[in-house]
Length: 343
Ligand code: 5GP
Ligand code: MN
Image (cartoon, rainbow, N blue to C red; front, side):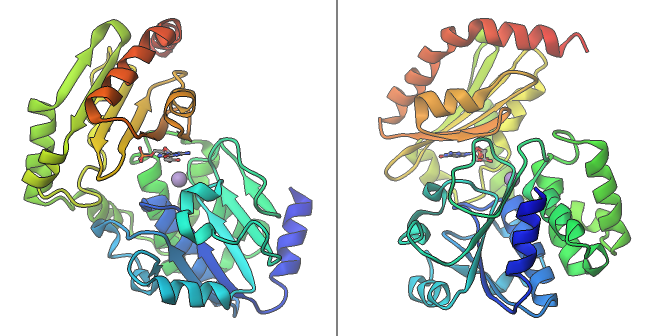
């Protein structure tokens, strides 16, 4: 890691024109880590722009400088122009080029340096230096570690810490998953830097529209199916639901987690029909690994307890394919359940 840090320090020794990339359908961690790092880098005198493949959810609109983010889907020419002018790239909260779609075009053979900071499993060899730690709660935690390891802990401004705190809050589900003593120390440092945890929690958790709450009701009342034999629950949404509820990006965020409120269940799936593909969001408890299920059967990936993937088959076929995999995991599900309940 020290060698990576030395390389990063060397790259940042001269003024750079930096572009920060993060993944499609960015979440709190993607946007928070990108803006947090941007605040730090600009404070060091670098030029820096965050470029994302697609827009961010409304609840993140309070983040400082969020309106400076360039979204490829909205303004592809401008994104291309900014990328062309970059001397250095940061890759945050993703570890393979397929997560940034068209932004990755030409990057494989691009000689300009790329630094990765990420906490997903199995990083691809697409950046150097790379700061990858799948045991970290969030990329925001790793961005803080990066700044601290550079010796610049005292240069974390309130704007920076607000951004990083937000990603930590969302990626840990409100400090429920992936916490550690180190994470709470980092969190304390962010509060010391001026972040108001109460205000951020209010922005993040009390930001639902009537439509979103009614959609949640619909999902739980009409679209939830339990498969008790395999301790699994699923919620699906079809194209008609998308029309009826006028579902926009971010409206379905977090719905999958409700399934795991039932203590006997270990796996939750949210399967939803998009214009050309069917997307799956998977969640699990304890040692139950949905990352491998997503990777093996739905060309996806992610983390052990939160993964995603996609299918080109119709919705019904995809739901059946998901259910058909479950018997293969029966022993793992049961072992995870026993382990989880013996703590
Ligand atoms: P979500 O279900 O919230 O969309 O995603 C949960 C996690 O799964 C994310 O952190 C992301 O890493 C991963 N993930 C979601 N969709 C995909 C996908 O299509 N491919 C890969 N490799 N990972 C995904
Ligand atoms: Mn993340």
